[in-house]
Length: 181
Image 1: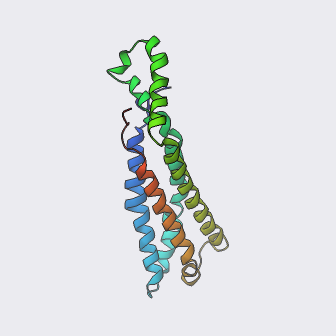
Image 2 (image 1 turned 180 degrees about the horizontal axis):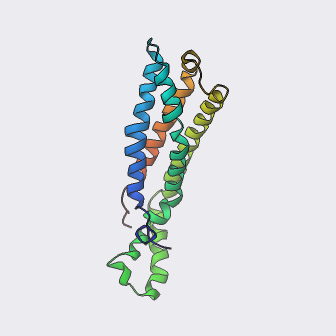
Image 3 (image 1 turned 90 degrees about the vertical axis):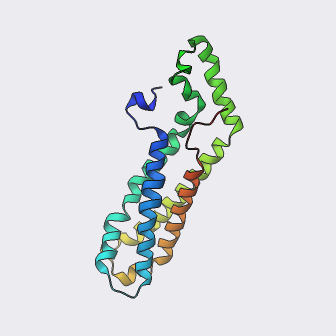
C-alpha cells in the first residue's frame, strides 16, 4: 500500500481537520444556525432562504462523501503500522517487518476502541444523511418553496443540524495523530 504522501493524497489528519473544523464546524453549522435564526425572525428574506437552499444545503452531499472517505481510510492511514513507511522504521528488514507490522496493528486495535470510534462516527453520519434526505424529499416538490413552507419544515432543519453536530463530535473523537502502542 502506498503512503498518502507517495499516492499524492493529503495526510488523513489534514483531511479530517479540513472536513471537521474548517467546513463542518466553522462553515456548515454556522450557516445552518444562521438559517434557523432567519426562519425564526419575522423579517421576510426570500433571497437569503433561497441562497441557503440552493447553495449551502446541497454541499452536504459532497461533504458527506468526504466524511465517509475519512472513515474508510482511518484504519489504514492512522495505524501505527504506517510508521514503517517512514524513518526510522522504514529501514527495518523485510523479514522483521513481515511479523512486526501486523503485530503493531493488532496491538493498536486491541488497546484502542478503533471499531467503536468508527461505528459511532458512521452512525452519526448515517443519521445526518437520513435527515438530509428527508429535507431534500420535502424540497423536491418545489425547488423554490415559499419562506412560509420552509419555516414549516423547521423541525427537519433542527434535526439535521443536531445530527451534523453529532458528526462533528464523533469525528472529533477520532485521534488527530498516530497513537503509540
